[in-house]
Length: 118
Length: 110
Image (cartoon, rainbow over all chains, first blue to last red; front, top):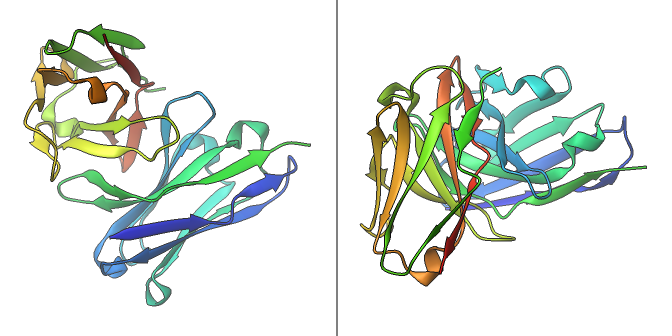
């Protein structure tokens, strides 16, 4: 199992960024997927989950209406579209495979850094 | 707002036993919250240790165990080793597809 994130970088407040996660070593369409982030010096924060077929999506309140999780199973890829970015969105973002059951984030990528600053 | 609580820091002597806890700001933690525990060293991705309260992830030594103690989820490390010095994060399913992480516990082995 391998998950490789990309798309991070420096963006101004109010700007947009799209993160991608390339999955390999397993069938993406068999799993829920997640995004989890960690601000500098802080704990982990779950951001969003998406069901295998994209029919169910869940978000932490702080990103609702600004972030959109999506997937393209044919391309073995997961995405996070981030709009109206704020300084507090600055973090390392990981994609993670989420297994339900047994309700576990069982594989993680290496992360991509998003910095929101003017 | 649901808050998941963890001890900010803990220390243990080599060979000793330590129990880290994971609570809820309002209410008790149960198996229905599917507690997970993750280990993280600086600059690295989290590593899955325990899921579904007490199931060890593949390759995790049996000195790591998970449980419910009283009204909290717990991670116990028996026979702590130097390389157990890490940050430990718990996460709970609080319903409606939502997961909440605690603030993490920095464990020092000395």
